[in-house]
Image (cartoon, rainbow, N blue to C red):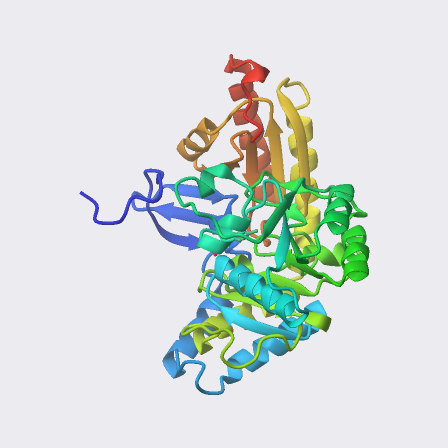
Length: 401
Ligand SMILES: *Cc1c(COP(=O)(O)O)cnc(C)c1O
């Protein structure tokens, strides 16, 4: 019997080694990884440069605590500021912690303005994490159920709906910030329309709100830019990062600019591990590899190749609602619940994910090659087509929550 607490329904496979887009299990069977540890292993598995950087840093110094100056943290802060245009960074260890920092920062910003019960606008189908505050911000009953009472101070609006945000602005004097994912990952690869971020920026500026972006999944090159917001011309006040930042060495970051910079003072927030030399060295090398190997351009090209390939492969199948992507955040929305596809794919040596019950989600390494993408398209296209052909579930049975 396992002594690991049963918080995951795990697939019956354990991997022993990885290289690029490939993983091998204990029996030596090879798998094509189109999930990259849930958008974490952007430079592929065990990239030699990353391994070297981690080993060298570990041999020199792993952790000292934030009671002292940390050179690697200063370097990473400088690098993140340079590629994002943000002013300052708080380092932590995960996505939910980065969002906790953002929520605390927004509340403190509100209190400084004399608002005693500050509120943050969040979206339907959002995912911000599993801590009590971030699950309260999350727009999923599945994530919240059983953990009430929820943290107050969140106002929920539909995704990609500027009118709904404007309406809150008219009626609620306590709002201090909006927190959004421009592309909802767990929610089903939902991509906001082109003018959405510009619209949010205008509303935030008019009302003195902080524009806070959760780029935990969409950041670090995945959409073809360092950050998803860079596809538009506007900048957020707060941005959170984690998943792909250090290729699997735990790290999270909450970045602030403009009115959000300088809000936290000594004593307001902290983390024992946050931004330690090991995690920062892994992040610095990850960013350098993405740059040197032009992986953002590759993410755009391979994302388009997979999108077009799957559209062709599934052209004759009924039951595909939409295939959408931004770089290598790819969703294939079906008209039926399709969780079974994950096991079918695994049996064929292909690692994929299904989210929101009816969306096949692909988050491959940013350095996936064309031949690997072709194999993914061929295998997954056939799997989905076969699944839809034998699926007798009526479209009415789709869960959209
Ligand atoms: C994964 C994720 C989180 C939570 O990150 P953890 O590291 O699991 O705490 C938060 N926001 C988004 C958008 C995510 O994809």
